[in-house]
Amino acid sequence: MSRNRSWGKVKPTVGSRVNWGHPLTKGLTACWLINEGSGGFLRDIAKGHHGTFSGASAPLWVRKTLLFDKVDDLVNCGTKADILLYNKSLSVVAFISPIDSGEGTIGRIISKSSGT
Image 1 (tube, rainbow, N blue to C red):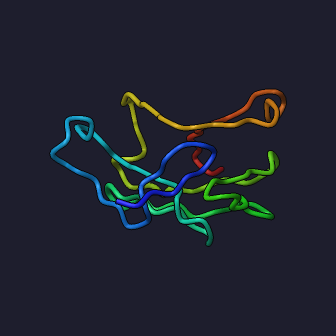
Image 2: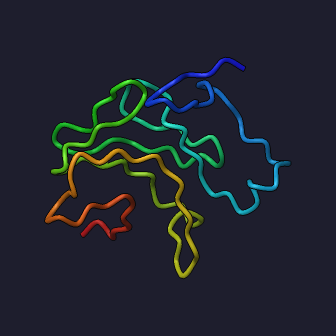
């Protein structure tokens, strides 16, 4: 499989699929590889929780990674029941390269909101 290199790490190519027979996929709800490189969405290769960009300027693509403006950029991944995480455990794996500590010095990697 050819691979894309970004920030010194190896990412699977666009169009890669989840190997549901692998033990690490047990309980997997979503998997965003963030390897699109352009456009206004992130494809979830696990269960279709595709994310759409929001915010006045939306996140920018930089070398197949996303750059957020620290003001209002976000990726909305929808409201399907299995992603809302009501009273469920959550594990997030991400490669983060912060420029500073974020809004009010409280950076957010993931946030759940009612939208009101």
